[in-house]
Length: 420
Image (cartoon, rainbow, N blue to C red):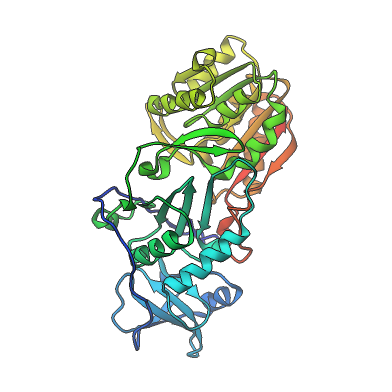
């Protein structure tokens, strides 16, 4: 989700599956004579500081035939050039790819990908990682994940579809990839007309086996956002590795069970995994099996998290570690969940089943929630449960999820390990 931290605006988008087609090569993109936008002084100040977006309300003039995907020159009110970007009709009007003049082509993409690759430092026995982290790697609206030898491109807007062919060209020449998949991010209705799916290479198996710090996970490149593993939580799982042994663990909103598997591999005596989706739980069980762990030795509940927590509280159950890493938004039989509305209640419910001295792993990836607000949810939930919390570890995203200081939206992830 693209969030305007300067104003509080939003732009949400969604990918859609489509037909399969092989892509190779692609055109060079450059502004046509006269294709330009003029921005107000507020936008100019942010652009000069390095911010990569221009919002629609900041455009005070335009010239040429501007259609989504057209490369435009960005100009100040005085006519000074502020860079080159791609025009869009959404909340974000222009994504800037160059601060000066030049083409948006395969050579530019190759340079940015090579630079990003040089910044990546991965732990041993890890082949699941993010190669391009959008604006933070100077490719706004573009995310590229590597799953062993499979690359997955995710684009934020249909206006960026002209980048697909040159991206495929660079990926297939710079990296040893066997396939490239394309997905779209958000709920933009224009995605209905866009192609997604396998766009280069052999389809192969629907699932791949990848490793994170020596732990095996099954992922599904065709599933887009639901591929099966969130690599930005790798540092937390890595830090927790020596702390699972002998502990009883409860993983709420467990998704495909990455934390559950990490806990079991680390020697947890029991792991209970709760998620509303049975298909996710089935994938979690498969991840246990992939690590020679018997799923029958642990527990999987397809149930609303709050109902499960309430039942455990009434039975007097206690856990040494409770994990609260919910989605930002979701819908279920009990209604709509949102971090802003419900996280405090979740913290309180988790703490009621956490043993004295136990650890709460609390996380959210909702960028509109500031660390200060997140702390407020934790304190409010602790007070409601009659508990006190102290932070014993604050995780940062890994090197493959860099955060440009000129792009405030990049500091989206909050993940704290707290002792109650």
